[in-house]
Length: 220
Image 1: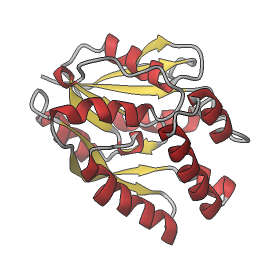
Image 2: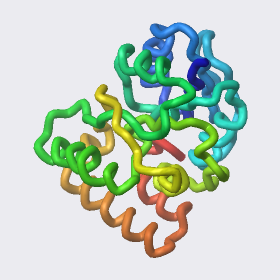
Image 3: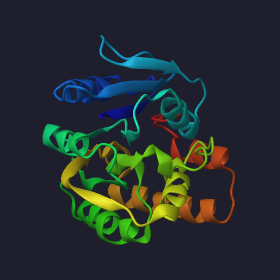
Image 4: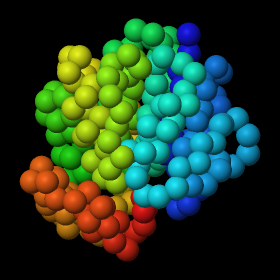
């Protein structure tokens, strides 16, 4: 058995995508699928075209194209160490679901707290964000990920946690702090909380994503 890695790709993610694909190539036997609006550089990955800003649709298209029973949904601006990828490959077919332990690539007190909260509180409540790089056995995905433009990872977690709680792998998924650097850490943190509350209250995912991406265009 092996693992299918799905990477949602967008035209602004070239530098990170090259780094991710190089890291994935260090582990033989992984099936790598890039789903989105831009083909991956070089070879070694299948490309599934998905136009539009819905990352939920990109992820689901990659899942639908996957050959293996264990999937890893890889955040487009995170890196997992090769030993973490091998750890998951060794558990293919019996991985359950969860993600990798989260950290940012910027050592800032607020970001350290954000990662701590995500690892120690949010994940224990059964919500694992995509920047953890979410893995799961395919049989646990009992219905498709909704084609939302934002909070697709929350929607995915709500499905997967019906099978039980997630487990965090003992390897770090290091995520770009580009949003915090661009907007300022406190301003971005405040925006994140407003986005979460608005989504819980039923606000349009399209409007929320447009606000979240303003001035950045990382997922639009």
